[in-house]
Length: 446
Image 1 (cartoon, rainbow, N blue to C red):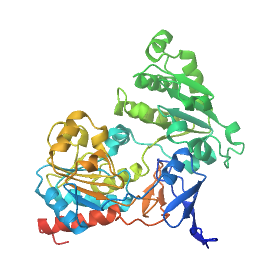
Image 2: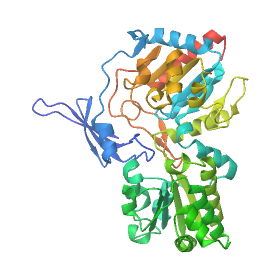
Image 3: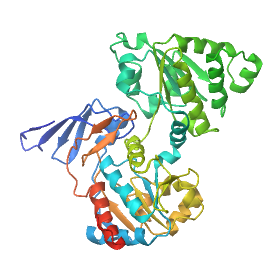
Image 4: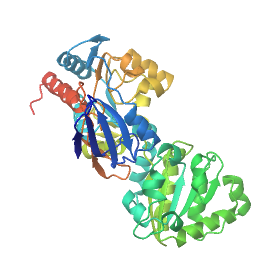
């Protein structure tokens, strides 16, 4: 819902966008009130956290061409043609990114990958990819953030630092809200933090467990053993985890006494030694706890629509990330078909990079190879990746300039309410233009 106020004394028109959605992080808060002046600049973002305010208030539309071919301005139509030629002629093309685009654009990107026989991968492969593998192996006992707010009386964070990565997580969903079965809010909840270092989030915890680095699997297996009533060697447990057995036993007693427990886990678990085995251990522990009480687990996702990317790629291919279509049907194999690996090994010969910046954060071999091949990049801002692209499209920012659908970290779809338009096209518009040209080149009638 939007309201406009008439300008007074020659001041710019003020527009208020109610219930706007912040796409900065996986919390996807949809209760933000935006004040827009002159239909071009956001001056206030009520209820947004410090990260959300920076996302909205620092937003500026890039004053650059919507399309650059070899660094020179070009029309969108020419860009679509060149992009389609690059992608269609590749013998091992890749499609990567997607986590900061709306689901409607993600669907088109997956279609392009299918038409050209590409490897389709999202930024999940370098963050919560191990969790996706664990979901397939163990399963997931899950819930929505609304259930956490209304029912959760035991909240555990493992390898996650929401105080800095998701500032409204505590206040809106997990610790502070007064819910139907936790009417006193924080007073009705026990909060536990497990991490290898004392983060800012630890200050909010009732119990903090600083385990040894790279020992998450051993710690989780200790809890699984205690849940099953297995006797453990106290000396061995402390040597392996860094925590006394008595403390682990006390934690397990508290977990069994909870009415509704939730474990949120982050990259501190998924991207350390063990990776998907760590996630499997945590998900298995959650499953074990349901023999005694109600317990669920959720990954604390980072990018605004990385959960949407996982959902869309899974809908279209059967797998969440790292999917190869070279044989005309989807194959899944992390490490072989994931983008950081296909680039580092020098296998990919063309690429479509969407709303991400691998030139700034991939390994040096991967960056070197990406720079050596022709690729297409879409991004609202100029980045190292767009600067080296054969075709670079400047696109509108989702959630601020364009609408669509994104998924919150708990797999709940949220609609976007844009604040003001952009002169640049949306991700979906550009990808549909590229897809149409690809189908012409491939002789596809559909």
